[in-house]
Image 1 (tube, rainbow, N blue to C red):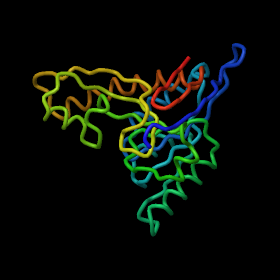
Image 2: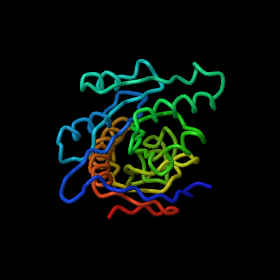
Image 3: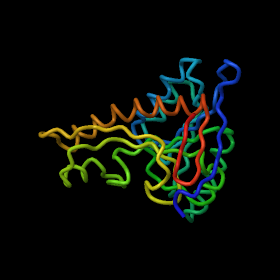
Image 4: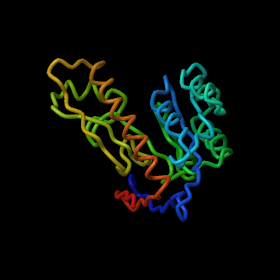
Length: 219
């Protein structure tokens, strides 16, 4: 059942000392959200380090961003496996090898399976470019414009077995302007989305968080 996690994740701040949480980031495209995290992690006080970046596409530009930052990369392509279950098992094994505290979907366009969620349930989060539960799926800005909403935004949530259906961690609103196109709205949402991802992930790793049912709490 979506939203059925029950997890307590301890923070990485102990007696005033900021330890570094291990982040694995999954991408499928240009990696602008990834870049925001890489930049934030340059500050030791942020409390996290990107230890690996993975993709389902060998040509994802985000892999080049990671390589320039000296971060290990890997690719696990769905088409290289006979079944989706085999792909999910391979992805799980590869991510687990980096011993992450938190796994972040930053524009990763593949749905993970049961094995992945069993391994990282409550520790796998995703950023989506709408105010969920409105407009799930890969065309959220287009769908928001078509519906005629006046406000949309971005949602950070804990991934479960549903499609953009997991417990919500944080949301940020972005007004829809009169002359917006899908492209202009998408770009404006990205700006707010990057800021939210960096701020909230930083708080999560430094202070910890709890997931009980559909409620996510950061102390």
